[in-house]
Image (tube, rainbow, N blue to C red; front, side):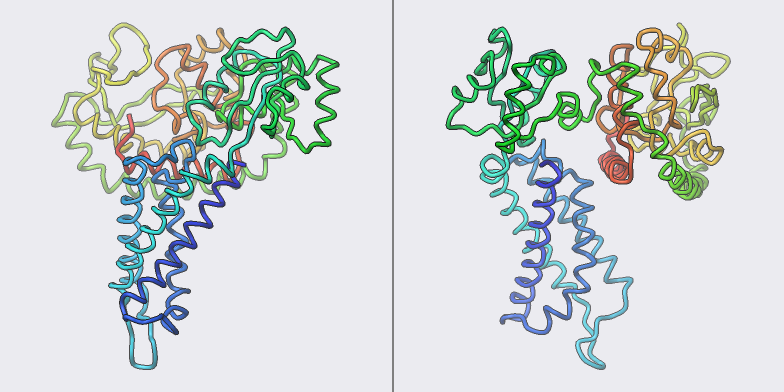
Length: 461
């Protein structure tokens, strides 16, 4: 349903932009558009195809934040400006458009009017969607069969973020104890009667409830009512983008981590990694003199920072970065009392280092790690051996993240920049395992686009 709703938004945005072009031509020529519309439509269709990418990067397709607020409409204004700038570049580079032999046009005014009318129509369409469609047509009622900490987490999340498209109807709990402020019954039949005439759309089945014979019989009967019955693990993944800890077991990983099926895609990714790392290297070479000068002027110490990290299959390698922290020891380290995680507003970070981290320019030298085959563009961030030993002692399944090459960016990083202690890193493991299980072309595109969003907002840390 989440992807379907995104497609609805995509289709609506495309229709609004097309309508915007029509309105722009009508305003420009003061009459009902004729041949001009059909002449310009193929050209503008190229630009309309760029608009969803711009909107996705800015965050307009994140349904959890699709609310009628000033910050949301600010994103639409930003998308309008970015799309217009790209349109100006596009028409500057492409050949002239000929209305008839010897008469060419450069649709500068039409471009600006299309941006005004098109994105204005998108703002109206998104307002109506957020106000009515999101909470009336697309919202599904979910019932939780069985209760555990993950169920409670999802109930709280659904309540906080109605943009997810779900509302919690109630809970089936064998003891009928009301753990949450929701209708709670011992059987599904009783809960259905209590919720009538509200229709149940989804039933999330916890592992403990799946062992109750009476409940299983009731669930079987729901198949004839076309109600979606989903195990809690899958529903949790769908809502949070993480693997729930209660699933962690040898049997679950053997059944779900189908690495053999992803070998072809992983080989394709190697080619993409090398191509993108090559261009990163060119950018790094061009910016190196300026970055090196700033680092030297700001603080004493080396330009580059080198540190041992754990890579694929547990192999150690040396990661390269531009130095962003103070050099406090003879070896150039910023650690006087042994290894510790970086933190938000870390006092060890220099003034230039703050800028390099916010723009992610400090990561540019890692193009050499990618070219050496030690890292990938996307994957779990590489950790230090000292931290890996501690984390593995706390969670033996932590080593599964080393089935992949570590990445320059990753699924865990686009959700949160810092994981500053053992507990938070074990939480990050849930994201890493989700990526390990679900990696593919679409998920990688999402990660890249959301990473671009971070870069453009200077939101790196």
